[in-house]
Length: 311
Length: 328
Image (tube, rainbow over all chains, first blue to last red):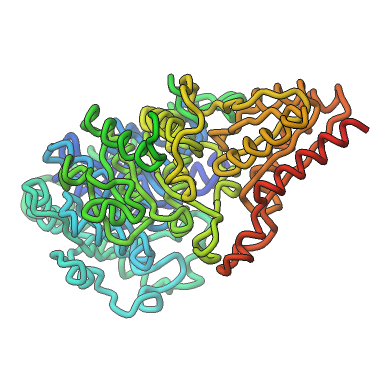
């Protein structure tokens, strides 16, 4: 969680320095979900992300330096600077990709799960999406298809209460996404998306069940994004500071740290040490990414079609 | 491949591909129990079972998305869209999630996916079910769009499409489903290569799908009057085989581009633009024309639909007019 937090904070600073050619969408505030889910995943599992992908990417095991290089538009990025945050992908890590189209990645996750089933693996696929995406046709079609085909996919709604600027109660009447599961004949569960232990505990039986061939499940992880939809979004235009402050009181990292300390599982100094270690990792990533060159202009015309001996 | 219909050729090739490669599977609306709305996948469910011949809900976005996700992760899905027109509801999946995947990943990801969809400008289907769509798809690099014109060509193109690591839209001309081979003994060609079906010296006629048959028939009639037309079957309309088109025009000095899609943008416009940009234009007094469907939707009424698309006579007159221009 700390890695995601520090990575995104550093990303925002790079953005302010004008080093990011596009935009950034910080995952800050939602870290417990990516971390809690990832803790239950294994080699051979897949993850489909959305337009706020840093948390999912880092938890899938992508190298922070190469993720950053991608966001900087450098050739050392996972996609040689062609993807940016919206199409960031690394299949070798099972990371199917971010998505610039809200809801667009959910059907892909269903396809990856179909592949796992057809290949006879016991892998599972996680589809992440926000509350806004649950109003797309892609969400409905994909969940229904996964349900009727009984595929090993977990649908995880990171319900942060806003579809860009529109409050959830203004974009859908029933704000419990988990209730929708019943419409597809699936189990659905609300989970505290700011509590990493709660996320992990909720996901574990669902992952086991999917691996065993019992099909998909839908989670409604209630959470909040501390920053705007993207770096230049002044979210105070549509939500009050008091609301943001209230959710910051429920910081997933502080909550977890306090719990560990109360249990005596870590001492305060250990947290400081971890924090410094994470800062070092992030700083090293920044230096590596900034040192990565830009792709040559000739790459505009490369990678349009994959090489093939039948073309 | 004698006396086999185009539909039967596709069916037999699907079965061959599935038998040869466990990664190949079929999904789509009504492809299993019914055997496809047009019967193309008949018998596959019995032979390969419901895991590999998957009836799907009416969800074009999810069908295509699932096929893309499976292709990204190592399978070779072949999905059927009942009419090409239905793909319009799933264009994000086709154009963003499939066609962009290789490029946006910096060349790391591939989507070895085949989408079969039929199209027809034939009468009776009404404005929503009579589209060609391919003209609009020329704007999306990364996508490959092929159109067979004969059973042998269908078998060859489908086989190559499945073996290709890129997303390929395999467009089946609905009115040719029952067609048997006119063109025998086709040597294998690369997937994106056009085929010169008839050599000629006075005019190049470029066509795809059903228009190829109209062009060949018209060229036969012109040959009776000693006018030799070269007929090019594009096979692949995206990307276009520029070398074959331009090379032919360099020999004939005349090009007629046929298109079942509506006038305005589209396939014929792009074919002529390629020629216009080429060196051929600078080296001769080139004549270029296109003959397309009307710049109008296709109406339901039989006579209106038929009149909107160039028939064999229209193709013949256009050829004769261009040949006459040359004699001036």
